[in-house]
Amino acid sequence: MRAQNSLTPVLIGFDARSMIAPEALWNQERRETYLLRPELPIPMSLDDWGWPSVLDDVWEKMPGWLGHNMPLWEELDQLQTVLSSEVCDSVDPYWLVAFTVMVDAKSIDRIRETEYKSVGDNEAPPRLFPTKPPDIQHGWTFLGYDVADGSISGLSNCGYTEEDDPPKLRREWGPKLNGYGLLMDLQDAVEFTAFTDERVKEHAPFFIYGIWLIEKVEGMRG
Figure 1: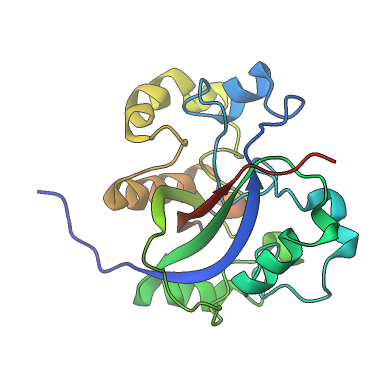
Figure 2: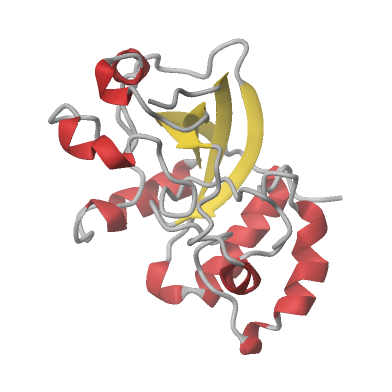
């Protein structure tokens, strides 16, 4: 029997992520280097480098304060207001998503130990501040778990070397990933987190993030 754990989700923010995979980014070479399931069209992730926001091109027009877990938005209503404004008169189809981090007493201690050692937002661990809404809402759909250090995904942005034996890792972990490139089983995510902490020590500690679909939006092209 697999060990039970006491991890619970804490909502940390929202974003609007593009549903068109950037060809220049996810070419075949990069897929083979970074993904455990290279055939998937869009590897979804907390990491906005691999799964970009539709607001990336208009970032300079954004409000001065979005939230404690940049580039995530702390207030869903604020994000939706911007998405419906003239700022977004030309955007790709996107999914409006929410992100949670799985925490227990041990992981909260890890967050507190590392949050003041970070250099810049992109290296920050998750920060546990209230969001609006404060909790997962009825009607949201769970997409799966990512494993990341606060911004960089251990699933899709920490390249696998020959020493890692990618074919073996794909045989072991590929079947545990869903069609979004995410882990569906929490215990698998716990085990992959421990594996990635050891494999990619320079970015440890890693945390488990849940991704939730709020709404699918067709987008507009100006």
